[in-house]
Amino acid sequence: MLVVKRSRIRTAISGTVVGNFMEWFDFGIYGYLAVTMTAVFTQGLPAEAGLLVTLFGFAVSFLVRPLGGAVLGPIGDRIGRQKVLFLTMTMMAVSTALIGVLPTAAQIGLWAIIPLYLLKMIQGFSTGGEYAGASTYVAEFSPDRRRGFWSSWLDTGSYIGFAAGASTVALTTLVVESISGAGAMVDYGWRIPFLIALPLGVVAIWFRLRIPETPAYEVAESSGETEADGEDPMARHGIVGIFRHFWRQILVAMAIVAATNTAGYALTSYMPTYLEKDVGVSNLMAAMATVPVLIVMAACLPLVGRLSDHVGRKPVYLAAVAATLVLMVPAFAVMQIGEEWAILIALAMVAVPVALWVGPSAAALPAMFPTASRFGAMAIAYNLSVSLFGGTTPLFSEWLIQLTGNTFMPAFYIMFFAVVAGAAVLTMPESARRPLIGSVPTVETRAEATALVAEQDANPLIDTSTMPLDILHGERERATASAGA
Image 1: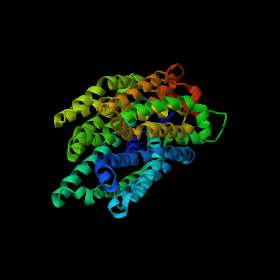
Image 2 (image 1 turned 90 degrees about the vertical axis):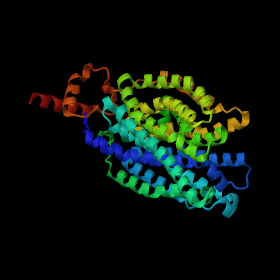
Image 3 (image 1 turned 30 degrees about the horizontal axis):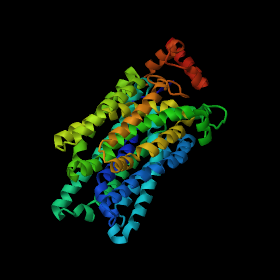
Image 4 (image 1 turned 60 degrees about the vertical axis):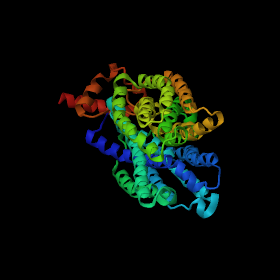
């Protein structure tokens, strides 16, 4: 039995959340500067082609994420979660800041896009281990009964980070244009938000240095589960072994991640471009409109996570499917009105299914895999799906609009993946309030541990066949001795 005090949980999760904040701060910057970056890096190309080239810069970072996940995930299973999370944070902060000093197309022509793509690829490689590692970390540090609540704070940090990126772009636009005129963002202002990532990254790296290794990983390591064994599904595996033993779980996780991220990236990274190009609002209004919606949605994620602890992950996911199918087309219709009030209402409508998808995910997805291979399996499933479907959402949404002339195509794109995920969720085992596979039960107090050990044989939420039994039996004996004393 693992007893993890609430103070340690807070320390561990706060140190993890800052990494996701930084990751999404960058996405916020790039997403809200997409039209500006088109002028900066694709000068000389037709406007629509230049926009697709810029959005491909967003997509290319996701195309290398599976490589980052395939490399960093198994390393995290071998040497521990904390060390890899420190590495990913450092890579993200440095590569984001370097974008702010790149030469422009006005200086070196269209060659300027190449170093931009290279830095986006470094970001993608690092984030290949970031979310998978962070979600694995918070899931393993969280008590079983409240894993949905504690894990949801990870994505709260993500969307606050995106809102911070959007706010930084909006504030920079106000300041530099008031000083230097309307073209100031293209001239030099676009660099400032990227450079701000460096001091923020230093703070985030400091937080990462303070977080401990997860108790679940330490228990698995001490019990020998982290030793490689090709035949034992509970042992540590490389890429081949992960696909061999967990291909069904990987497909289910990929479907959920695809639905979550097509809706999530449409709300965040693609929405500024859509609002400017297809709705016709200003860059400043596009940047500011989503900020209050994202902040409110982020504040609601712990509530959704707590709801999933009470009713289960599957009912919340199925509610997300229903909300997507009911709200997405009306949201894009309201958005076409073009007034600020209409855009806020429309974005709030899109945010409802996003919150229902995101809220349980940091708890539900890692729970599909055993502790010894969790980081690697999560990295593969999450990054394959995000690379193929999530990160390409801005690019494919814009391409579908240009192909068909139908501005509702992003809504249909999101709805398709919701239906696929709904079918996958029906096959998924419920994981709420249950110990992680390959781990002993995790609680917050010694009294809770004693009570749980006493009733574990009759508790339908506990499956001892997936636990390190030598450690479990030792805990049972200690709990019994403690009760007798």
